[in-house]
Amino acid sequence: MLNKVFFACVLAFITQPTVARDLPDFSDLVEKHGPAVVNISTTQIVRNSPSVPGFPGQRDGDPFSEFFRRFGPPMPRDQESQSLGSGFIISDDGYILTNSHVVGKADGITVRLTDKREFKAKVVGADKRTDVALIKIEATGLPKVIQGDSSELKVGEWVVAIGSPFGFDSSVTAGIVSAKGRSIPQENYVPFIQTDAAINPGNSGGPLFNIKGEVIGINSQIYTRTGGSMGLSFAIPIDVAMEVANQLKATGKVTRGRIGVVIQEVTRDLAESFGLSKPTGALITSVEKGGAADKAGIQVSDVILKFDGKVVVSSSDLPRIVGSTRPGSKVTVQIWRRGDTREISLTVGEMPDDGDVAQGGEGGGESLTRLGLVLSELTDAQKRELQVDGGLLVNEIKIPAARAVLSRGDVILAVGNVEVRTLEQFNDALKQIPKGKNVALLVKRDDVVSYVAMRLDEK
Image 1: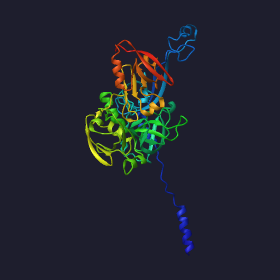
Image 2 (image 1 turned 180 degrees about the horizontal axis):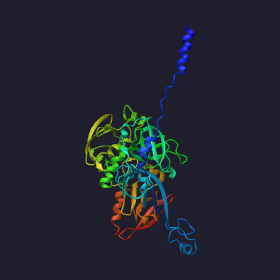
Image 3 (image 1 turned 60 degrees about the horizontal axis):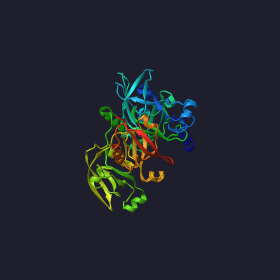
Image 4 (image 1 turned 90 degrees about the vertical axis):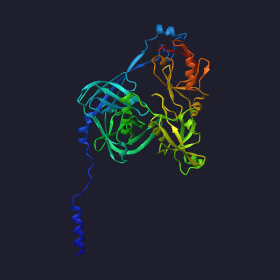
């Protein structure tokens, strides 16, 4: 009798319909919100260095330059390059969010909607530090996305990316949130969202949606060894992006706080040596003279544990917290010094205009000079690598004439016969050169050191 009951129960269990948890269907999300995603194509005029035909890199003034100019094959000077990206409409009157690297150097921008309409766009503002750009097209009644709250995002929840990978418009991929608050080298101001949604070249600037159809991020970067997706994608949280976009819309630029320090991570060994119970905070390795931190009494070897009430878990947290603090604000900084915690009052300074990106933390930084060069002071590690005692690193060249004689990665050692180790020394040396006159720069490129001449523009 018992056997009959047992087999009857088993049979009833087998014949019952299996209750399975359905996988999500994203079709309604794509149909409703896909029209707010746009394709962005850009053109850029690449101005080549005036090399002499026959010998790449040979400059005017070489003994053979005239010969090759007359008898050598013609060499192209300017070329047009094109690139593709994505974006999404945040207001029905034509404001669009995308990545700074998609439109930052473009000479022309074309936005194509899902209904095949095309518009010329202008850049309202772009912020390199967060890789966020705001562009505008002249149109009304446009579909727009719904903004979500990236702070409520949970690791493991579904996300959807829409964009134009390799130029294939309106491509949809899905995945999950792999991690939050990711730090990427040289990206100090963004706590990235990591996902395994397939992101490829052309997806940059496109939206990352949650399951409710709300935008919670801008797809920005991928980790790849092949050039294609490897399941490691990074998105800028929409909260960070919208804060930047609102400033760009209001003023065309982003204002950030700055305190003038260089920092490094607190390892377990360092924490033990400083008497900290666990590896946390940001270790100060350099304090800018006259900066906000210097005026407040912060010293080398201090460890910043809290800034304006916000806990600094790792060194990468500090630039984000400081950068989002309004310049001029008075804040309390909790530090660890010689075995004890202290609280110091500090007035936050202001980060220089865009183009001045902190190196190795939050310190030295860059500066856009009168020659149209974005320069930065060398860190100790860079000096050792480049085998120089000082100088200024060329990070960007904004004036076409300067591209003829300088390249990114060059190190300027002197202006005339005046050695330069700091941005202040460089700018002071330029002040001695009359406008419209040539200035001689001693430049190290790879293992070659030579002077190049540039004209100090009348403007």
